[in-house]
Image (cartoon, rainbow, N blue to C red):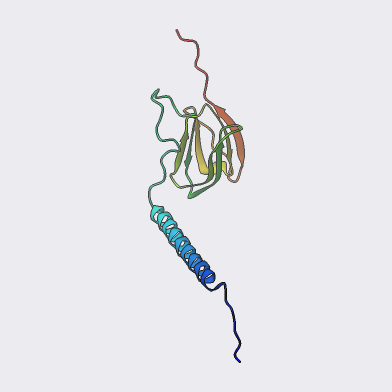
Length: 144
């Protein structure tokens, strides 16, 4: 007499293996597409501004930060108590511009950036000096 082996999971096991392989292929394709997207954007011109366009009023931006070094480490800009607008290193020549009425700013090395607040340049800092400050758009005076 021979041994009899029942294998009730045969079809289900094959279906699970097939599903796992399909999921693995999908993840590899998605990862490859993301990698190609990242690599194709390297070497292109830096993003000119953090906001799509200036307001129609023609007023100076509340904050403009331009990177004047090869790499400008950790530039954080956020709305007080709200959204983080920028939290990353900047590259040479990259400029970020903001028109929000009030912003909190933290810069890891103030000697690597040029900062303009409401059209007025801020003094450049010492190498390696960190600085945090708040900027706000001036309130318009009375008309007339």
